[in-house]
Length: 183
Image (cartoon, rainbow, N blue to C red; front, side, top):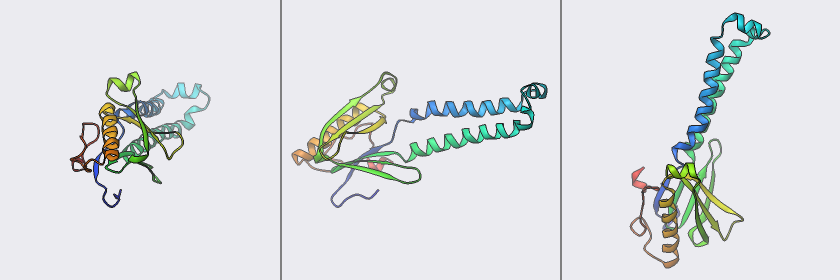
């Protein structure tokens, strides 16, 4: 992503890797069912009503669905990123076509943190940003070290409003968002 003139990257992150666990378990189950069906005794497959003739296709379909689903999910996770600069917050998503949502720090009215029990146990959560120029709330979903990220965004907003020095030196960089040279 290109930065605007006079803009400097403070930090960036992506969703917590644990967001992949539940879908990957589902995809692994599809693959396991496909493999299991492949090893059913022929007599049992025949009793299931001609299942024997379609077994190879069912197995192949389940395995392909599991692998493709896992790859697509991983790809979406890989290309979803959150960027905090001295001028704006940017959420980039999209595997095939990219979508970039940018919120100027001057327009941020409120920054909130939502942590449900499960994500909270691993330090993840949703950072919700309310902007004057948009309807609704922009959500930075399932961010690792969510409390630190929320504090960083709040500090960046305050620094922008007060005209504090911009750039990585002017705003504390916590563990949730990493400095640009850290990636």
